[in-house]
Structures are given as C-alpha cells and as structure tokens.
Length: 530
Image (cartoon, rainbow, N blue to C red):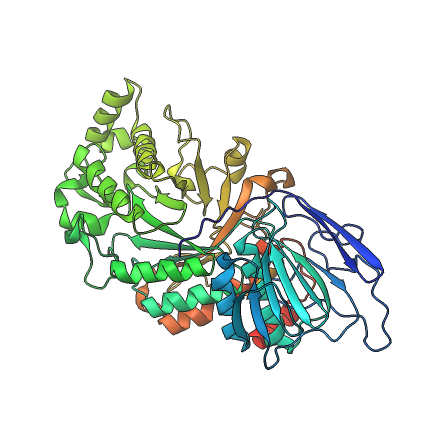
C-alpha cells in the first residue's frame, strides 16, 4: 500500500511514569536526550526517572543497537523475550504491515487489531499528536512491549530496535526508550546505470536499510553508459540489461513497506549519453563540429521535449515525494570560453535572456524548466552542487535543494555559500561517502571507521565542518555507490564493502554526536546483530 509519510522536526513532548518516578522529556529539532537526565546530544543515555524498587532484578542497561537509541530510562524487571503464544497486536489497521513483519521476524502470532493486551504481547500503537513522525517510545514492562509513535514510520523504527535487541541479546531490557533521528534524510544512493544490479540484490539492500532506519534509496538509472529502466515513451533509449517497470514497482512497494522513499535521478543536461546514442541529432557539438560526451544540446527544443517526456513518464512509476534532477558536469561549462566554444548555446542564451545572457544562464534555465516539469507532480527537488553557478543573471529555483558532493569543479563554491543564501543542503561528501567501483582518479573505498570517527552531517566538503549555525539547513545525507568501473566488484563484493560504512553512516545521521562505543565495540556489535 502507498503511505503518505511526513518527516518533520517539530518538538515532541511527553511524560512517562515508572513506578514511583516520573521522567519528563522534551525534544526539539532532533537534538537532546531525556530532559533532567543530564544526557547531552550524542552522549550515552542516562536514567531520567527513579527506578521501581525490586528485590529480584538489577537496574536494566540501555540496549545496544545500530543506530544507538537516543534515550533509555532503566527499570528493574526481567525484560521481554519472544515466547510461545506471544502475539503482535495493533491499535490501528494502518499498522498491519508493521505488525505482520514483526510477528514473522520474532516468531510471534499476528493477532491484528485488539483492545486486550496480554503478557508476552507486543503492542503497536499510533498516538502522541503531531510530533516528529519518525519518533517513537518503546516501553518494556509487565512482561510485554508497547511501541507507540505519532506516525507509522516511528512505530516501524521501534520494531527495528526491538528486533535488534532480541537478535543481539535475546531480551529487550526493562524500561523506556524514547528515540528519534537527528536528520530527516538518511539515504543510500545506487548507480545502476553504469552497472546493472539485480532486483533481488536491490531488495536485499532495502531490507538492510530498513533495519538500520534509513529512509531513502536513490536510483541513478540514466547515464552515458546505459539507461536501465523500461520506457514506454522512448523505448529506443533503453539498454538491453534493464529493470522492467514491474520490477521497479516491486522495488518501490518493498521500500515503501520499510518507510523508504525511492528517489529517481535522470541526470541532465549532462550524463545523457545513452539517450543521445538513439538521438544523435540532439548531441551537443562544439564550434568545430566535435561531439561533446554525454551533453545534450540545450539550444534545441527537441532536447527539452525528450527529457520532459521521461520525467513525466517516471513520475508515475516512482511514487515518493522526492526527485533528483542531476545538473552536474555539463561539459559545455568546463571549457575556458563556453560562449566561443559553443556559439549555438551562446546565441540561444542571448535570445532568451538578452544581450548579457551566457551559457551558464542557459544551463540554469534548463534546470529550472526541468524542475517545473517535476514540480507539477508535487515533488521536492534536488540537484548536484556543480549544477549551481556563480554570477549568473538567471538564478536557480529557490526550492532546489543542494546535493553537495564535491568542491573540485571549475569555479567551486564552498558549502557556506549555499547555506548563507538560505538553501537547504544534503550531504553526499565524496571524501567520506563515495564508494566508487575500481577507485578511479583519487577515489578510495571509504571505511566505516573513518565515517564513524571523523564525519558528521556538517562535514559537507573535505574534512572541515561548516559552522553549527547552519545545522538546521542540512537535512541529512546519503552514502553513494558509483559504478565507474562496473566489473571491479561483484554484487556480493559491493554488499560486503558497504556493510560497515552503511552502519557508520546510519549512526551519524541518527545522532551526529560522538558515539558512546569505540569503533572496535561498534564493529563487534554489528557482527553480533548480523
């Protein structure tokens, strides 16, 4: 089923009573821990309530999960573990998917919507007002588990915590967890254009991402090397090895069931080589008639039509609320004098924007026009940072979010330029988050340890963080697999190679502070959780 999932940074406030003590909690914008507990953002959770007296059980310890929970109020009691006859019940039929999945994973019976709750049960409930839809509270008490949140996504994340507790130690500890992510965008991006990945492999990654509380899967499926998804509007551009629309629908449905939005990317006006192979008349050529690799001629109306055809077609296939427009590495703007090298682009720019119009203006206008096409489908939009140009008379649309990946392009602009202008930014830092097959140029395979110990969402470029005042504009980030040398690794090798980087990135997007565990401890935990 299709879900509508809002990710907000609204404050979440509540109270919980544990025996003789009351813990009061308040979070805003994803920061902080349990109020009154002394817990600072990024620090180990501490008790926020007096424990119930008991003669039999020690005070519980916070669970060990990936990502780590933000706050745990300990209590005395046996905790909870799956037992024969235990049920998963829900308060609302909208939680049926989460209930069935959890029951199957923990060997319980899915009992559907029930008002009665018995010892041994897991109860999933919606409630808590209009707070962060990804927040949840999990209470282990009286031999049962209650997971509640204002939105389905938060309840789902609570079930992921429970699954890890059981798989990692057999028992969910007594007490109360209150948890929510620091960042609303926690993504994994996969280049399936240069290297085809099987439907089964992609679905395995979706299950892995869901358990790690990721909420986004980016699919870069069009590039110079291939176009990898079936098309009805332009079947001539599709590569032999591709995903059918039926396969994509299954991928999107599985992702949706894990509260993961699939974000498509048809990159333009560069990286369109596969499209241009079938439409050579649209290939950009320089003043000497030499074709420019991957670049479409944006002075031609037919160029806009074919790209808009594709954008409109795939908007019906990818049902999420986000879209990546690309916009990077348009080769016409990497030469010393674009106006002289591409006179047809310069002439089109002057015709459209007046005597001072430039090729950069024309490229910015192209991006804005494609944004308008997708905006009509009610999507939020992003583009690579090197698709935003300094000193143009035409400004990029204000709602375009910056996918910041590098500072190596000609005329590179530091992240603070985008942030100081008020733009929202997504972190794809190629220093830490780029897994490029074959390690071409200066790329090396990133390590989980380096991400875990050195990176956080404010480190947008290189190794230096932007000032803390910009933190609210940084929506999150994505770990990216690029398939530049597709045969450098098999699917299995890619899955193994990204395993620990994905876990480290998940931890730092959920809670950017200094982790409580050392890297060695974190790795051992990952091995135990599977």
